[in-house]
Length: 209
Image 1 (cartoon, rainbow, N blue to C red):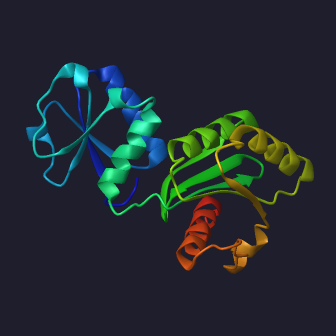
Image 2: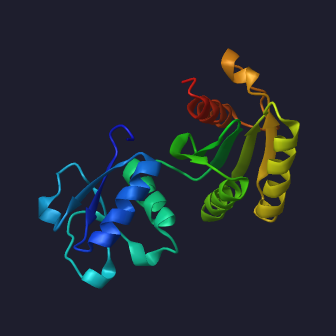
């Protein structure tokens, strides 16, 4: 779970509740489900709800599922409201193409979610979706860790280039050995904060934090 981040869920639809709870595990956030706003803890400021249920929610920031194309987009928007102080300046997706495909998805210096994928196509689809949902970010990077298999790197790189062309993201291959030393090559005109975010993403992904 994300430390200190909780989102409320007000719905009588058990199928919707189950889907949001499933999504919450990927985003590592605690979802507090209640039948009405009065039953939520006082420290829960952001609530996910459904317009179709016409439930009254006062004194909370409300995110309605119907306003978004997917539950991922809904969850990410709710998280941004709950975390606060995110300016969508930089988006980073850090990918570990090792024995299993792993990825960490960052907005500014905050890890929104992590995931493991059984197929390259599934990973690429998630990367494209994340970048699309944050297309308005000032800078977008996909950082690909160097795997022992050169063919794997080429496969992932090719599919990524095809999938995210036109989104304006920069793909960088980074030698993972740098992360074990706490040193990473700074990319182009990256600021100190952007560089820190990159280090955070890769350390989080590789379990080096």
